[in-house]
Length: 567
Image 1 (cartoon, rainbow, N blue to C red):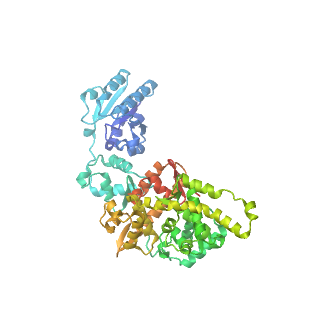
Image 2 (cartoon, helix red, strand yellow):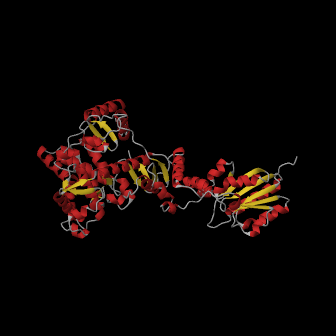
Image 3 (spheres, helix red, strand yellow):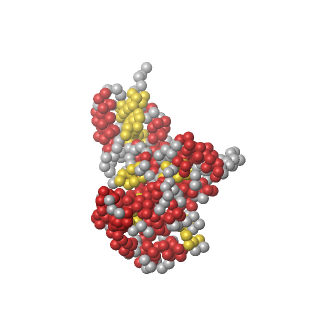
């Protein structure tokens, strides 16, 4: 009995199509037992469609990274392995599957080593290589091509493949490898599409996000589960129950919202005045929100607000956060915690911005609060903090004592008065991004929409009468049209609910990113935002830098190149 020869099958994926996989194995098996079966290619780039044929036919894929642009990386890897196998003495011959003449010298060397050399390739293979083999089989002659297919069978095959591999990470490269291994290289223009991605987009059952493909979610019939939206009183009762059991834990806003959705199902908070849960909490008198922490009003120690107390906290906050400036949202939360939610109305102001503008010695810019003068402000603070001389004052008569105390207390205020003219700096010149932020802020603060004349008056007070002309606009409507997320309805400024919802999701994403695992670099966040929210642009919110946008979000802060959580 003649013993069957043992052969090493080495396939160059760069030069032979994966559609011939079955015929290559059949042809190679005619000459002996295939002890080694290897296919060489760059699998990070898909391996030219050989991924599935290799898996399904027990062919070992050998990774060969292309270190520089050009060829030969796969060739050298095959040659090195062939020589190692030759010296092992475990085979009687080699089957070299390639159409590349660069393997001519390898074929000659293997023959000199007493090996049977079989070549398999396409008709285009140069004569120099074919004549160096004992036998050479032309794929175009030993098998029929599988280029012929109909669109219906192709669509069914693709859809079945996605269903079997829908892991939310299935990309176009894997789908292309599957199609190539089954049908060969397809010219999608014959089907009416420019490329594979356009072909995938034509499936009503599939959805593509960049390079990732998955099945579309089929909504459940409404008759299966009847979702009853809870009443506001039921939501309030559940929040009170949750807070009494768990207390006002730090950063409990997201936990609380998640708990409500678990109890009642997905809640449409817009029924209660806003799609954002945080704003719903702000409108409920039973609760106090400070940043991302929610507590019961009965547990909050709110003090009586006075103009002096308000201005004192604002000035101190501005001074404590020099030179970087303090976040306006954080300051508002501090004031709510100190005086309660209704402090602005008690002071006689309609909005936070107007209240801040009434405080001398401070300046709000780009959502941050600064002292309006630098070193002079520090001197005033030091003077105000110098200890009095109680022993000498106490021995005076009551009238003299009162006069001296009045002088001591009034002195710092007298030095603050010259700072008032700083307001003129805010009016010259207007900056388009700052104006955009003001428009968005005013639109968000007025639930029923702010009238255009009122908006124009507010902006004129801040930037001067000619701010529209200086910005290059002829009318208020033309300016508003350049601000994302807002529109003019019946001469009133309205903010788009979808814009608010998307903004809320973006803020939550940034908030969780700052507290998640892995890199917290601003650069990493930028990439994830653009991937998660296509079309995201922080300039839509009036910011020239992503770090400024981050600093405007409660609970996070941009520090250098990184995003940090803020308690």
